[in-house]
Length: 398
Ligand code: F3S
Image (cartoon, rainbow, N blue to C red; front, top):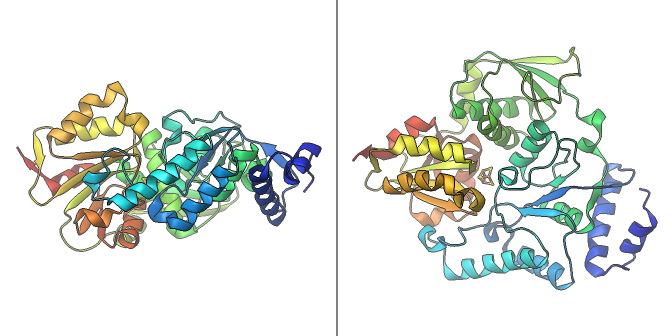
């Protein structure tokens, strides 16, 4: 990789130890991946924020970086933490976990990161411009940024995204190059998608079947932002898909012609996927908000819970970002959900918090990504269905 004089100096430690370490990481990554140089980035999204995920070793590493003077050079937002920073007790989080989670947050804060703690940074102020190079490390947000926003990012890990934030640059390879952003497979959708959950199931199905690559999807109507966000999460959960095109909706696939391998998605394939993220038995906890709820999703849920209440022994837990939670326009929706007995958590999610401490056994959700991970992260059963049916499983008339 060719480095500028300034980059060489940073590597040699002339801008401090932390910058040198960050540069070393980026150069090593770039050389392994065949990058020719570093390119400036507009923003970073850093994963590895939950204490439950990174543990003591990760926490101490972040504190070391912070003490060595690491400071971010670009807008940097964070993935969900392991607890709601205010309502952590309501989640069953203990004092030790809470203390350690705050140490992690403090380390990031001292490096200059925004304490957003969300997988939907693009809804709360980190919305890259079309064509901007970025270094993001949250799989659903990566897919959304590449595909819907037209920004350019590889699937970064937490350390490489943080290093990119500190240096303000990332190695130029992979999805930063236009030639690697072309569709690799045509997907013909032969099922009618009517709910947000249908889009999640479609994403999960495509990811399950093709595993990787860049699908270009035809046959989809009414693909709004919330639907693309949940589909993006599912594509990256069952597969490793960091970018997709939707004909007539996203802009990236328009000029890339035809002649690729073609795959049809029919109802049978969708049902196979549903079976993979569904368990037998009656759910006792409904989780909505993977990825974090937008204002529109909170509005829809508030309408559904009106006049109902959470049944005895059941739970309705809703997950969103602090930025959305604090919006005056959603206050009424949050009030409606809480009136029905639902709990709303910010800063965290069902997959990265210690959900097992809440005392539930079986989660139902409209997100295939959440249902994919929760059985292993929280040792709970999981099932999927659309929003109205979820409500039926845990709500009763008031
Ligand atoms: Fe976001 Fe957590 Fe789902 S990070 S995409 S809510 S697993």
